[in-house]
Image 1 (cartoon, rainbow, N blue to C red):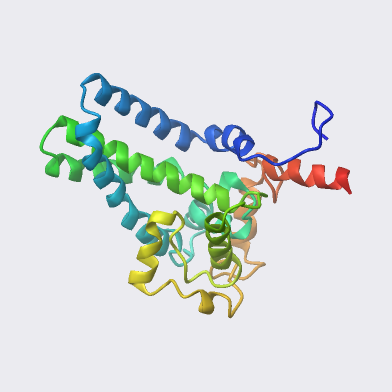
Image 2 (tube, one colour; image 1 turned 45 degrees about the vertical axis):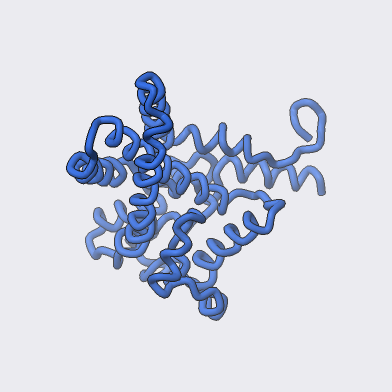
Length: 253
C-alpha cells in the first residue's frame, strides 16, 4: 500500500524522478540539452539543426559500445587505488547490479570524453548552429543510454515485446556471458552485430563472471565494495527504488 492507502504499483515515472534525475551526471547533461535546445529555438534554427542533432547522436553510439568493451571491461588493475576507481566506473555495477549509484558513468570519465568530442565537433561543424545541435545530439544519446541502462535494472516488467527484449538482452550480458551484448541502448544494437558480440545463444550457454576477472574474496574487491557501501542510495545491495519495491511485495504477501 502507498501513502494514500492504494495498492503499490511500480512506476517508471517514480524511477525517473527519484533516481534518474537525482544523478549529478544526468542532471548536468539534461540542463545542458535544454539550454542548447532553447538557444537553437531562439535563433529559429530548430528545423535546420535536426540533421546535425542526429549526427551528434549517431557519433555517440560507437562510443557507447567501444567504451563498454575497452574501458568499462578493462582488465583489473593490480594497484588497489586504481582498482577502486574501476570498481566505481563499472566493476561495482556487475558486482551489485541493483545499486544504481554504481551504474551511472562518473563525471571523471564523462567530462573528458565530452571535451574530446567538442574538439572534434569544432573541427567538422560549419557554423555555431551545427556545433550546438551536434553537442545536443551527443548529450541526448548519453542521456538515452543511461535511461536505457537504468530501465534494464528496474523492478519493472515491460508491456511491449521491445521492452522485454531490451531487458532480457542486457540480463544475458550480466548473468550469462559478460563478453557479449555490450550495446545497451537500442540504437546501438547493430554494433554488437558488426563486432560479432550479438550471439544470444552463446550468452545463454554459460554463467557470467560477476567479479570481472578477480576472485570473490579478492581484497581489492572487498575493500572497494566497503568503500562505496556508505554512498548507496539504499543499502549495500539495493538502491531505494528497489527497496521500496521489495517492501511492497513483502507487505502484499
